Image (cartoon, rainbow, N blue to C red; front, side):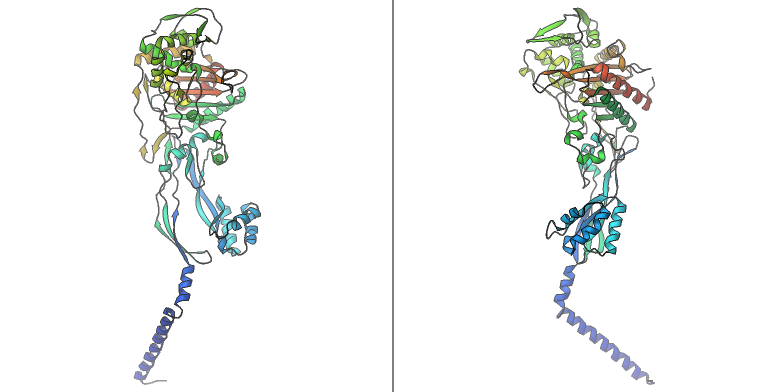
Length: 556
């Protein structure tokens, strides 16, 4: 044992000197002899910055019911460069993913040299966790499970063609999802990810959290939307129709409570549907409206003074015009009818008589004033504008077509908006589907006057008489005065001639007639056997209107 303290200190110093010397020699070795090998090891670690998808905003109905939401999902990805036995990996993963091993093997070997391939996108979390556990247990290098968000539509068919859908990458591709994509999408985040040579993550650093997309509240009322779809579905089934459409709106604000298309489709399967199945027909498709279009003739005639309340016209059974015979739907003899009777009986001869008094230029002008020939401006992508030839291209018989809703095409929403103008005292408002974005109410364009209040009141009287005096008895709603108009339009066959078998039946109306708060437009495409607006569309209107009045607590 060393008793001399100085010797002990010298021994300790010697040990430290030897240690420091060894460290210095090792450092020199690493910096020179082994520098290339260390550099290669560092290079084998991979550092990359990647975007992290933002959480997409939720779409609600007007009462806060979820119509489109983002839910947790898992995605399985692979780095084929790190997989030495693709057949084994495919065989192990296929039972868990419930898919064919051959399809997995194709993905793993289909692109030689690829460092990234999706094996399964946005599967349920339990399946994703099972894959992750299997990969860990079996040491499946190159297999990774990532968390993602999947777009889900909890109400399935409800308003599917209105909502549209977001694709696999959560980008809006149709409907409201497309229209409001910029606010729903949010801002992606950013991460720095360090992975080892075997594909395992060494470190993940969040550089930017990103911003969640804003929520969107629609004007749609879930209950009214459901009722409208059910009524139309029953109507289509009863009449063996091709399809049907309905719009329920507030004529004073332009808020759309329901926008229904039948057949309905499941929004969760939107990506697998055809373009025709995805279409929101009420907005993007046009048709010849028939007698519901007589609202333009009546309003223009009153505004221009070519017809006055109570003024009668001699109406023969038929009119010969431009080589075409115009007659009413029901056979009759000569009559003297005022505008009220012309509308109640939906007289084609009477409508054309008023139209000829207006002349083609004024009639064309008033059609434009009521919003036809141009989109309504509704907040929905792909809106159609309708079509009509300018007066310079009219033939000798055109003045006999247009007043009765032939030779002009419109959308169901345009027609609903035209009647909303009358219901709103002559002031039109822009229909809209979006009520609020985030914490801000959506801007609404102010309305503008189209016809005088006096003309609107006179039309209210006429359209109320249509329902109550025999023109559309099946549209009556107990306890309420209803104003409205029927329409039965021949469709054009492939040969370009009007069909004698295929028709469109429609009805547009509002209530309470003296203080309108709800408007419903129904269109039924090709009901069979023959059924027009009064027999096919009016009963559907009645059911939807009655339910909507109760839901919105509008007193009789």
